[in-house]
Each structure stands twice: as C-alpha cells, then as structure tokens.
Length: 476
Image 1 (cartoon, helix red, strand yellow):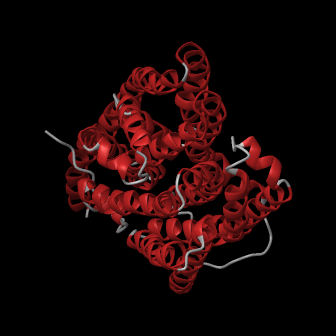
Image 2: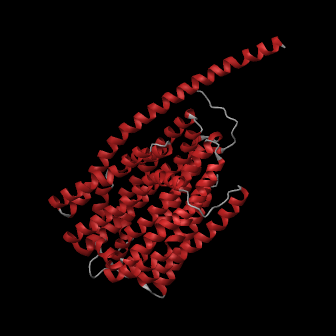
Image 3: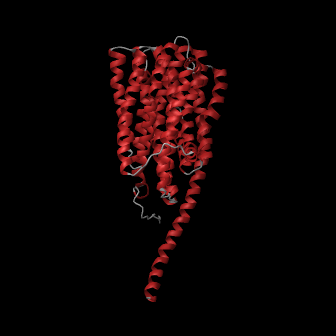
C-alpha cells in the first residue's frame, strides 16, 4: 500500500502530480538551454556557409568564451533559484528576499570583471584558446563584439530562473526563444544579405540578447512587485557564498565543455590544422543538443527536489528521483538514436567541404557511442545540489571531463593522434556511468529509508487521531 503525503501547503512543488511537474519544468529548461546555446550555433551555421572553414574555425575558438559567460551566469542563476526553492520549502520568506536581492549585484560584479579582464588580454586569450594565425583576425572581431552583450544574457538567465521558482517556468522559455528568433533574423540580414561575415554574426548576437533581456526585465519586475520582493544595493557575503556554493557545480558542468574545447583545439591543431578545429566545432555544437536534454531534465528536477527536501517531504522526494531517472533515460535514448542515424546530415548543415563532412560524421558517432548512459551522471549532480550536498555535487561535476577525460585525451591523442581524441569520449563516459550508478543507488536507498519512516509515522498519526478525538468527547 502506498503512503500518500497530505499537506496544507498550496505550493505546486508539494501538491501537483510529480510527472506533470517534471514535464512542466523540464521542457522549458531543455528548450531554453538549447535556445541559449543557439546564439553560437546559429552564427556557426551562417558563418560556416557564408565565410567557410576559417569562419567556422573562428566561432569554434570563440565558443569557450561564450560558454564561460553562460557558465558564470548559470552558476549565479541556478545557485539563486535552488537556494530560493529550499528557503520556500522551509517557509523562510525573509531569506528568499535576501537571496534574490544579493544575486543581482553578485552577477553584475562577476560578469563585468571577467569581461574587462578578457577584453584587456584579448590577443593572448585568443591564441590560448587554440587559434591559428589565419583564424585570429576573424576570432578577434567576433569575440570583441560579443563581450559587449554578456550582461544582457546573464541577467536574462537570472531573472528567468527566479521566475521558475516563483511558479512561472514558461518565462524562461519565452525569453530565450525571443532572443533566438531575433538572432536568426538579424543574422540573415547581417551575414547573408549585407554581408558583414563574422562581424555581422556578433552584432546579431548582442542585439538579440539585448531584446531578450529587456523582455525578461519587464516581466520579472512586474512579478516581483506582486510578490513583495524588495531589493538592496548591499552585498551580503554569507548569502553570496551560499549562492556560489550551490551553483558552483553548475558552473563546472558548463565550463568543462569550454575547457575541453580549448584542450582539443590546441591538441588537434597540431595533427589536423584548421580542418580539425572545424570538426571539433561541429561535434561540440551537435552534442550540445543532446546534453541540453539531459541537463534540462536535471534542471527541471532540481527546484522540485530542493523544495521538498527543505520541507522534509521525503515521500515526495523519493518519487521525484524515481520519475526523473525514468524521464532522463527515455529522452536520451530517443535523441541518441536520431543523432546516430542522421550524423551525416547534421555535419553537412555546418559546412560544405566533403572532407570535413565525412570526418565529422565518423567522429560524431564515436563521441556519442554510449551517450544514453550519461543521464544518470548529471541527474546525480543536480540531486546532490538540491539536497545540500555541495561537496559531492562538486566532485561529480569535475569527475567526467576534468578528472577522467582530460588525462585520457592526452594519452590517447599521443598514441592515436586525432582518433585518440574521439575514442576518449566513450571510455570516460562509461567510467562516469559506473560511478554514478553506484552513487544513485546509494542516494535512492537513503531517501527511500527516510520516506518509509515518514510513511510509518503518518500511519501512526492517523490511528491515534480518532482515539484522541473520542477521549476528548468523553471527557467533555
């Protein structure tokens, strides 16, 4: 017999059906993450076809810079939203206000200081990212302009992720979708019709990010007024530390791709030159779509799990973990099958060079060989974040790419050159899956034990309540 949790709370994280909640929060998260990454992807599609291999190479070099700022923004946005969700579960509304208020100033300081540092060291940064002398002028033009829009994109992430916790996940999708649609249209005019090449693509990116930021800003402040959320210009160090501690694993998950891209650019430029860098760009953008689904489901699960953990509702938390695991496994298998079948058309969408297309098709299939097993790994990271196990979440977030993949890619590239890089992916993915499976079983058993105890306690309360009422009536 199942034990259903009854609660007086009207928050949807406690009352609405778990499967419905997961779809409601995961789908906008998946699409918004995909759309947020579309800036570089759409630019790559236009520039790759209009400018050629050098243009594609330039955007491949710029990709880690864009990913860095997405990672920093998500660190603050996810740290804030998870912290807020947990505080809502604890019914601590004063803390909710403090967290949201601090997040704005914290994000501004982080993004501005990082953008200024990169801007002052632009030439060194571009060559560090693996650029060749021929790609450098294209990359410099693109990155210099894109740096001007990092605050727009960052605050769009922050506002929309707070809106998710306030029960309005569609705002996240709408803001990202608005920016992406504008980017496609402006890209067409500035890259194809005028044409301005990589410069036009960069202008299109920051213009569309500005439009999305204005929309999200207006919607958020209208909602904040209704929710009586107040703002402060003073930075609370303890609250800021809490935001960064929770969100740091998100930062590592996102920035790992950028670190890997830099290493691959540097390694493979030795063995394959500009063509190899272009192939890395195609693979990173293609696999990005697959990983957006995994991270989207995990992201959708996170505030629901965090709220119920804060509310000590272990019966519901157990159900959240179980249904999220099923959801992420099914979705990854579907996407993986599609990518394996359509690997060649995917590669062809980015470039016209038949040699690059053929090599990229083979490489892509090797890279995603055991992708469906990775869902569990990322679900673990976000679950540990939601339940306050910051250290475990951090260790898992650096495990797959930093601890396993990077040493492996150096060893195998040295032995097998360019193909060693592609083989490194399925090997590191399999090792990560085994580790994550063990940890997930342990975590599920722990929450199951707490849920059973809670279930037994509720049954006892139900049995005692009538007796107490009878005794009270008799005494009266």
